Length: 182
Image (cartoon, rainbow, N blue to C red; front, side, top):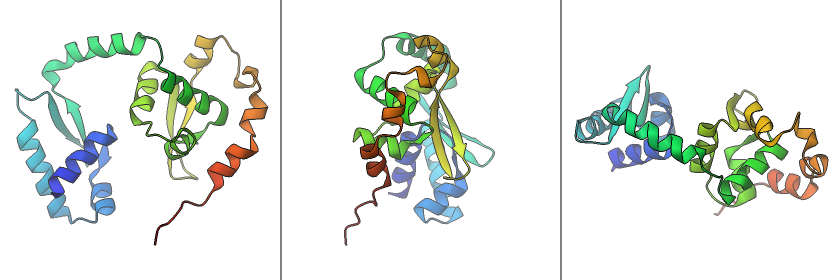
């Protein structure tokens, strides 16, 4: 079951995860995590598998099989060049008006998971992901490419920028204490 959990976390994260973070957040020993990583590697890192586990500098990540790189790249380029979906536009709007903003804050405003949307916007170059040293987590802002794509010199040129940037109802929502069930 631990192997399944680690596999699911790596798949959902879609980015490199430090082994120490897996141990810490899942409350596991180094030996248990090592055993799970070795099991996942043995099952996936085969020529016949489209998914592999990459391990580098004490981090692990689920990645595509290197042999499929060219085909995956072609597909992703086509997918990333198509029109933005409504959920992508909503997420991009939230980031433009409220950034720098964390993924949990975006999800609180939208009410749904945004992992895949954020990945797509990152691939398109419309947003930037940076580590916020104060909040100790990743924050998202729009990129120069996004501003160029919509023909603006700066975010302040967005319609009603200050109104939405400082909206009191959104501020209240973001400052709420999470509900804790006892």
